[in-house]
Amino acid sequence: MNQTPLPDNDISYTLTPIGIVESDFPDKFGVPRQAGLAPAAKASLVLLPPFDDPLAVRGLDAFSHLWLTFVFHLGPEQTGPGHWTPLVRPPRLGGNTRIGVFTSRSPNRPNRLGLSLVALVGIDTRDGVRLALRGGDLVSGTPVLDIKPYLPWADTASDAIGGFAPERPPRLPIEISPQADVVLSGRDDHDSLRQLIIQVLAQDPRPAYRKGAEVRVYGIRLRDVDVRFRVLEQAGQTLIRVVDIVAG
Image 1 (cartoon, rainbow, N blue to C red):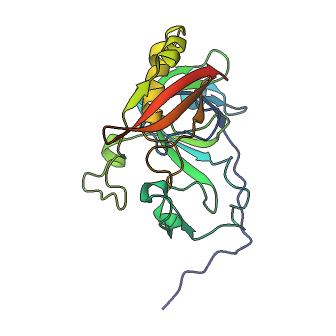
Image 2: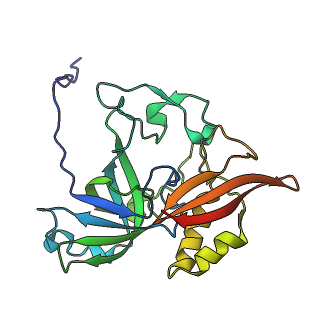
């Protein structure tokens, strides 16, 4: 029986970013663990020369959503083709259970490639090409390698099974302190920033092994502010309280 020849182990590929993301997430801490979990999250994909030709996106405005192939550029330095591990610990399983790297969406992958589904809000071609996006899970500075339009009839499987993540993660209730609310109310983007804070914190961005109430105050960067929060227990329920919002 003929066997398919194995590829030469010395084969490598050079991938050139076509654009860079500017998003509401200056740091990777707090970035939603999947796209679509924070619909209020805004971003722009700025195409780089020579890919910033308006002809390259002609007709793209007919689509509502896009697939972005990107690089986890802030991943641990020990990952990559020569440094990787076959087992990872996904947050969805509490951060302690190990599963195969190809069973997860962990950023700690052999080639650091990610795939994100985002909503396309608009296209600006007045000076190069800038795509306005919503609902992404990308930190600012993320290099994007490719764009493909989302096709509902091809990209949705009605009989799909979600393995260890069969449904969206649970959401915690959010409480905003009067002090933080005053800061929010004084901003031009108070409504969208409030929604972003609620949607991001409701997913409990702490490390997966952190459970229940803590004395510690955490800080998460969103847009140009530092949102400080605590996790509390009230009447037997875990909730997140925003204690302060300060300029980043």
